[in-house]
Image (cartoon, rainbow, N blue to C red; front, top):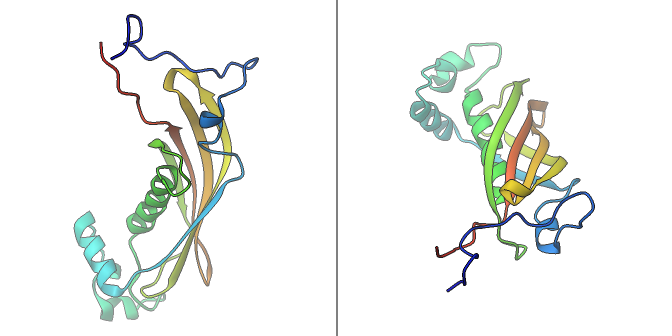
Amino acid sequence: RLGPGHGRLRPMAGADDEPLPDAIDRLVRVGERFVRELRWSADDIRRFADSAGDANPMHHDTAYAASTPIGGLIASGTQTVSAMMGAFATWFTRRDDGIVRDALGMGFTFALRAPVRADEPLRIEWEVVAREYKPKHRGFVVTARGTASTPAGVALEAEGTGLVRPPPMETTA
């Protein structure tokens, strides 16, 4: 049990004239890069499109999709965007390095550049380009830029912002 005056969280160090504690500083670093590789089958694409409410025949009808200039089923843009956001969230909440983190997505922008075909390898890459410590939130507002690429080139470009911090401390009032 905490004594008097310890029931509320206080901002941690982090002012310009005060170094951050190592436990906070290590949460995320500018220049960190992370990669996820995946491949979606035609059935994966159909299931995702169904769950997203996307009835576009390019995601469902093999014969129709084959008759188009693209030449086959393609993943919904929503599917590729979701995979990008999932990779972002997974990286910033990982535990494999012994650091426990919480993360909340704050905003994303995406530009779809090319289709992702069924059974085509997809490589998702993100790089942390900025971090700003926010004492009020006991963590960093992080900006990362990323791409999702197939062997044919970049299919999607993205920028994401999120809050990365240690998990909330348990307190008693």
